[in-house]
Length: 296
Image (tube, rainbow, N blue to C red; front, side, top):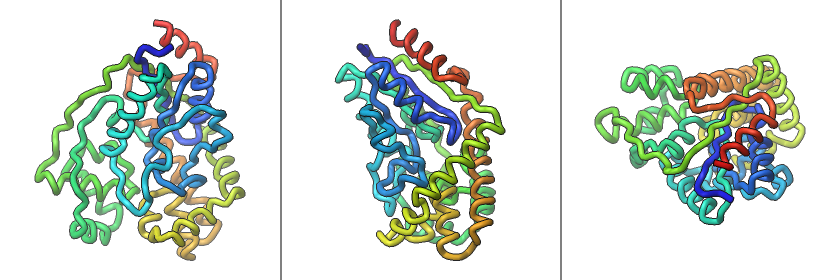
């Protein structure tokens, strides 16, 4: 059925990307390639919003649970594994559906941005880890304003990694592109601000009931340090702070909800300028677009 065509589903957190990707997978003989910087890690399920086996509805998923949360996994690693997965899906005559909200991972994979795969620098990391997150962001802004404009300014893990690459190469690299050689349809899920906030709040309550804090506690028991958990941001950061009794439950819910809403805004800031994206409000629109695209 597929002669080498690719579908990409993007949008802010909690907008329904995973369920749309599964729907398209069922309709068009597809396999999903997850593009999420936290869902690659084993054991990080509820906090990252990882799709469950039941939710997959039999549609094969790739790039989930491929990394150890104690180790660094970069966009360069993701792009290599993603390309391999897409090649295999197309060879099987199926439709690859890249789905996720990590814009930099999607660009690395689909647009083939060649990311310098600098080795971790423990000495530099130890120094940077002592700096407050706002100072890390200011430092990155001074060294690479373009990267600073697209990064999560409250995520120390990403900030440190960006500074590490700059340090390793001695200068800010020019990003080269080797895009995937397949026609690509970009579908974006558009949600009204208030609707999205309500979805975020509802999903957070559901995750808490399912045992998100127990998941974070278990990751720590398996040897993932509190500082490492905090570096993953959002649910893992605030969950780790709560479990260490650095914040109370009320602060946890209030601040985490606010940070997830802010993160969704940053995701939209990243995706909005991309004119390739067809923004849809209903799944039927996505099905129509995919049907037309795959029939070409």
